Image 1 (cartoon, rainbow, N blue to C red):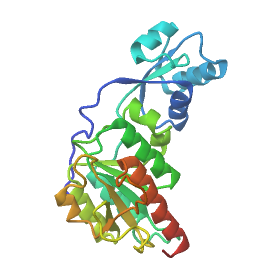
Image 2: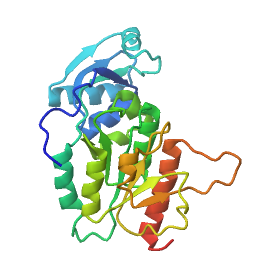
Image 3: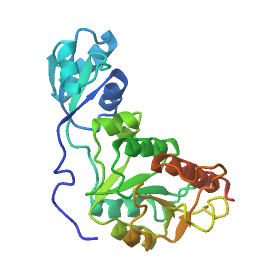
Length: 266
């Protein structure tokens, strides 16, 4: 893939992250740039101390305002007296993805197989956040998304991920099928989640490096990307409902892959 030099998140809009847990998790990870911090008199004393210390250490503007003002800006009454205006979330680009694969997936000597996730046009912020939460739960190594038709990392995504986004290695690329090709060349099996697959995930050997593709709920995995998938994985459905949403399906498959990678068998 050719190097691109322009920003991966030019369309990012300033937005507010609120609530004790969400804000403190973000500040403590010190990864996602903060543009401004707000505190009200109703914030917990410990929260006030952490926020003030962060403001001083990182030179971030801190404004002490009323709870009503925070509610007005966040459009939420459960802000717990604290909010942060967030900048662009740091995502790697296509060249950084290639470098990362070389460093982390090829002849690393690790006793644990790599596990990556490719999100194909996941546009619902709640679903995207839930997928990131599942990725963190199984310690997925990286998440790859496209630079269009894909939910950006926003405060809504962060809250839906329960803070997991702060510990996620994310790459945003212009062409997912090209990224999948790079993964295949590095010896990583690209597998698509598909309810139309002939074999279930229980019947497929997954004790190997895997990149799981989670497709759009509306249209599934894009045909061009599907061409790069060596496997298609189906979740056994035992009830009357024969489909799951993207986040739930992704979580089930990620745990099955990790189970097999850990135990070396189906």
